[in-house]
Structures are given as structure tokens and as C-alpha cells.
Length: 119
Image 1 (spheres, rainbow, N blue to C red):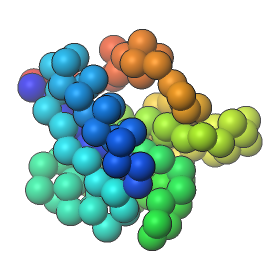
Image 2: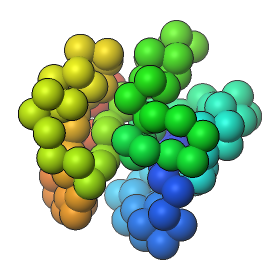
Image 3: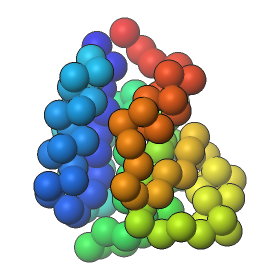
Image 4: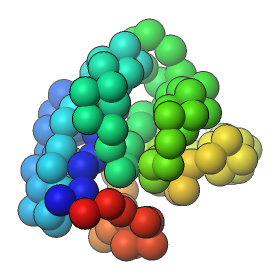
């Protein structure tokens, strides 16, 4: 079963997304900060990380490269900031996609369907 970590300080958003991903066959974990995300990744390296841009202890954009150093993972930036420059920078740093909230589960699924996932 593929595993996803949702990194967002909006608890309601991350819990909703976790439920939707579980319905798509993922196991999930949530993290409300970069510190929490580091721990979740250390506990169970995810196949997918859905990452918010702004977190209480740093910027998700800066975390992309760090997260990818540990091995392959599909990183999806999911943010309220609609900025083409930000989107290009996220992709340059290794994100598979940059989605603007409120993104639909179909938009996210389109990205994940292209992602290599472990069984």
C-alpha cells in the first residue's frame, strides 16, 4: 500500500485530504510543521508528500530538496499561493506538481497516477 504524508498546519484540510487519499488506497500520516514532517518521514518514508508552502517553522519550498535527499518520493506542493514563479521554483527543486487550493482530489489523483509508487 503506498504511503502519503500530508504536511499542512491547517488540521481540517490535512485530515480531509488524508481521508480522501485513504479512499484511493493510501496509508496516510499528517504533519503540522516541518519538524513533524521530518519525524513522519523518519518513521515511515512516504511514496508521496503533499506539502503546504507556509508552515509555522519554515517554508515548504525550502523543504523539498531536504525531503528528496533521503530517496525518491513524489512531492506535491499544495498551496493557497497562485504564483507562476513559485510553481516553476517548486518544480525546479524537485516537486512533481504545484497545485493551488482548493485543488480537487481529481487534480491530485492525476499527479499521483503518473507517480512511481512502491507496493
